[in-house]
Amino acid sequence: MRRIVKLALEKPELAGLMLLVVMVVLFQIRSDGVFLSTNNLRGILGLLPETALVAIGVTLLMICGEFDLSVGSVFALMPMTMAVLFVGGVPFWPAMFAGLLLCAAIGFVNGWITIRFDIPSFITTLGMMFMARSLTVVVSGGFPPRIRPGEVPSWLFAGFVDAGGFVRASVLWFLGIAILMSLLLSRTNFGNWVRATGGHLPAAQAMGIPTGRVKIICFVICSVLAGFAGMIQALRLNSFLPSMGMGMELQAVAAAVIGGTALMGGIGSILGGLIGATIIRLMDNGMVMSQIDASWFQFAIGALTIFAVVGNAWLRRRGRSMKVETERK
Amino acid sequence: MTGPIIEVRNLHKWYSGVHALKGVSLEVAPGEALGLVGDNGAGKSTLINILSGLHRQDEGEILMEGRPVSIRNPKDAMALGIETIYQYNSMVPIMSIARNLFIGREPLTVSFLGLGWLDQAKMRAESVRAIADVDLHLRSPDALVGELSGGQRQGVAIARAMHFKSKVMILDEPTNHLSVKETAKVIGFVQGLKAQGVTTIFISHNMHHVFACCERIVAMALGRIVLDKRAAETSIEEVSEVL
Image (cartoon, rainbow over the protein chains, first blue to last red):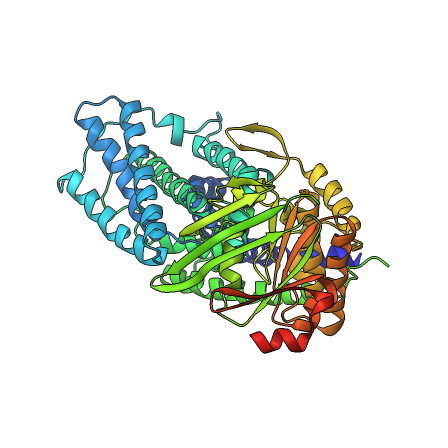
């Protein structure tokens, strides 16, 4: 029993999960039951996959010991590139592929520069954040491209899949990708390398893991997911604006951290990133539903981030200090 | 008498202008327990880093069982049967024992281009066996390495090296920062290796630790070997003298 409690306390997602439950209960009470109504959940489910997909990539990268501030800009650049190509006469699928390829290239550059010149990814991706945002404006030429609804297969990414109009295709994409990423991290040898690389770099190197390549792959995955999420949002709203995804990078980091991912790398899980992203979305929505001044949203996210990290550290310490015998007599 | 299991000839290494190894030649016989001593900067770590694939020599040859070999990275070294155990650097504290044991050499059930699905049952079962083989008894292969004591960690590292059938085990300052009791345990592990016929190179600052488990002592100073004797024919005083 003690062992089970100890293991549970050491789970990085625990604090986030507890917060999530408390929040749902509080908002449900404060909003007189509107919070968990079908209509409101539909709204939340529409927005959640977009934030969560970005958070998944950022979480994976943070577990690998690196950081990406350029995801918000990539979030805008991908749909913009795709839309400009499409308007310019390129069919939808090649345009989408080109957009994703551009994201992969940005992820590769982020990773390659970070590894090759041995500089903090905070700096590399901060630079990339500005550059990619600027590129978004440049490719749009200052005028957002217009695509008529129905011209592109939006339904495949953002349309409702059930007759009742409750679940969007984006939810399925996001669930599929989340499960895939989660399995990649926890059940494959690549996942083992990611964790070792982020957990203790010298050990990973001494054991012959190509740590540079592992990191670059994580950068690429993170960038592609951010671009894909941006595309989903653009298709859902049917608008392609250069200002999309502003502030997304920090929300994604906040989501990862609320979900128990350590800034130093090694510790964390995809599920934690999802919990964090859900908390952020619920906070946004729940405050409106509970008629709290929405200007407090950012304050709440900030406070929550700090609270979750402190709570997590505390729970983990409690877990550690629970003595269980490691040696068998 | 069989030939040396590992041999280096005339190794040189420069680190940005510093001549760290000045023509080191050394032969190690199979099954031998060799103690390598020397002050900081004597070149011990440089020699070891070359053998374990972290650095490459600028000049000189390495021979495994009489064959010249080229060790370009840690993977090459491990493939040749050279395992290195570092003071801290060989384990990831936030990962479980079973996962640590197989970092970079995970057993897979399905794989494609070197990537694949972990065989977790096998990892667990084999790690339990590997750990028991070095006489360390841990309750669960799922415990995090970070929760083990320093001595236990070194035990797991040695178990890992044994599991992968290493021929030459290099222990780089494995007793640093360990308590007296834990140190005794690690020295016990090393003596156990001798019994299993594994060649060991044991590096330490502490002469007592080296004399406790090695039969041959090699001392280095300023990038050269300055003493090479059987442990029985020399003494801590004599070795200290030449350093």
